[in-house]
Length: 194
Image (cartoon, rainbow, N blue to C red; front, side):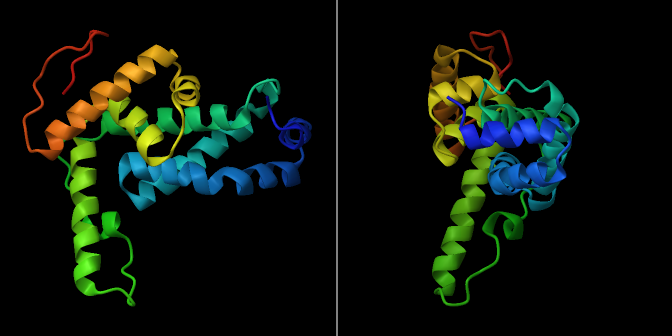
């Protein structure tokens, strides 16, 4: 059930209120950025994706059905933009450790910071080997904390499909983590996995 305050904000946006749109932006900007960042592992691209998502929302808010959850629609836009970006990007891109690790906290032991940076880089490298639709569900579930029903709505699939993709994504991630080759096989949906 949509939040009544949010419905009121959306209705004001649909009537052209810039203040209402700014409030929606403030409410969701951080989360959209982190979804994009977790999927793409690049601060600048995540920022661009987040901004593009809000631009699309702004252009299409008039067609939004207030009986639906706004955040689901917004996150669907973000995930689709990320998947499109991943499909365009080369599979052989390198990961910048500074991007993955973020800015070091000077109060921490440098060995701990280095260890965390290396772990993040290894996780991101393993995630980057996954096909986009598997990376999307794994990121939304295990990093962002969405439940399978929410993910199904965001990615436009059934709950059963999301659970299957999540299961498959975890297997693929484990294989990538262990340094195993991800065989070029077709999944049940007829898509090539790598």
